[in-house]
Amino acid sequence: MSTIMTNPWIHGGPDSLGAPRFDFSTNTNACGPCPMALAAVRATDATLYPDPQYTVLRQRLAEFHGVVPARVLLAGSSSEFIFRITAWAHQQGVRTVHLPQHHYGDFARAAQAWGLHRSADEAGALSWACEPSSPLGQAHAGWCLDTARLTVLDRAYAPLRLSGTSSLSDAQLDQVWQLFTPNKALGLTGVRAAYVIAPANSGAAVDALQLLAPSWPVGAHGVAMLLAWVTPEVQAWLADCLPVLRDWKARQISVLQNLGWTVQPGDAH
Ligand SMILES: Cc1ncc(COP(=O)(O)O)c(C=O)c1O
Image 1: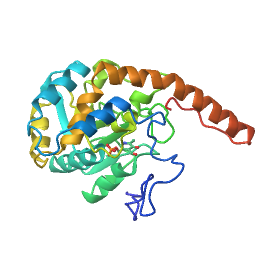
Image 2: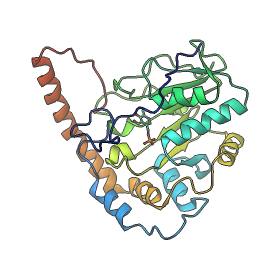
Image 3: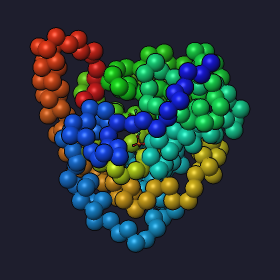
Image 4: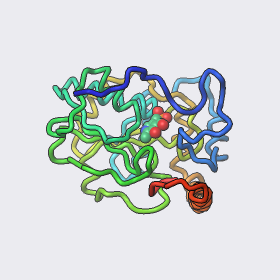
């Protein structure tokens, strides 16, 4: 049965008192913001609606991931898509959710909103995975691609991976819904935009998920950020961040260990 939280609105980052001086909870890239992405967002023309089909953006994201554009779905944010795919799963008759022990709270909130019960049995469930995991940055344990009704892999921290590799092969990744939110890696979490690579041969499901979205789920600033995300300049900037983050992480671990803390291993920043 569900052990879902009763106060669902607690997040890290800013609150009614403003931005915290030190934020260890949102896991945004500490080297950010990415100057090129920030400039693109600032330069965007906010007087116009984006293309409602996001044709160019979906094409660019598809090229970036080596998939056909029909597999690319735009979302207002990861959080928005988490609710949308939970709604769709419910529409398909799914009534249980399978969650990692530690997880981003919206997985459980969305399940609660749609009356899905948390179950240790993954058979027929909406199964969530996050790798590198949140908050520990570790490999996901307990994949159930063959038994779950659908698996959604939250890849928020994949671009900020500092060690290790994905547990899933390319063929296995083709079986899951991959959710990407580049605002973390770009240090632009205030820009709300994300995208999904749907499993191969999931055309009907993609259509249904598009039907569940309002018009223009991503605004002009989100489009600018996602278009910037796939450019070689921004990817080169991100690649340059990784050794810096590795160094900062090693220094932080050493400080904590000198204070007598036990630090859990993790592959992310
Ligand atoms: C694992 C994970 N997924 C998704 C999100 C939210 O992403 P978005 O900003 O796209 O809503 C967070 C935010 O903390 C997160 O930690």
